[in-house]
Image 1 (tube, rainbow, N blue to C red):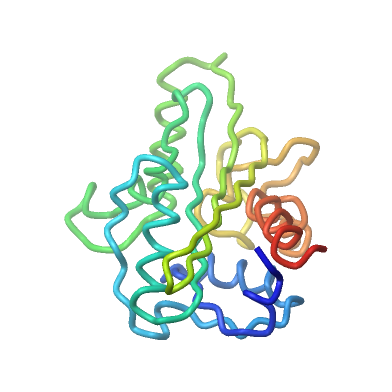
Image 2 (image 1 turned 180 degrees about the vertical axis):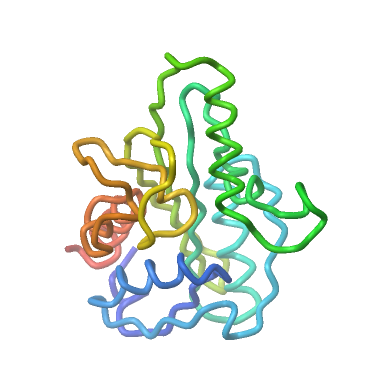
Length: 210
């Protein structure tokens, strides 16, 4: 891939998640790209029918590229818990869907965190709390070309949730080597060590040679 295929152009960020958009935009800020969200363009959210992060990231990136006629970047990411056989994994966001619980639309991340914690507690007090966040970034061009980059950060879960700076499962995840959750540390610090930062470093090296 040549740097000229991305550098200086417009890039659609294929997400309707405000927290994810903010984080991705911060990571892309130094690259001179004009970022536009799928939500701002009024693009529909495609059904994420894949069974892996790679499949779902490609579904979103290709749908946005096709609908907008612009190069599009999609992120599919999630939390995996070792003691739960890698769940919630690709269903990370689904576990926060309120209609599962009370028949209402939208997402309740405290409910999702509680679901994970409840399952761990049911396994017993000595259950390991090892977990990791995965991120796959997919870039798709309107002509049909695509490429993916994968990132990961390992850590452990804590309870109760701590911090207000993150989103999703951030308040219960502590990265290896740290004693604060992703929702307690400064966002710039999180950007430097997160699963998304890992994937972005690979993207930047490949696309921009940096």
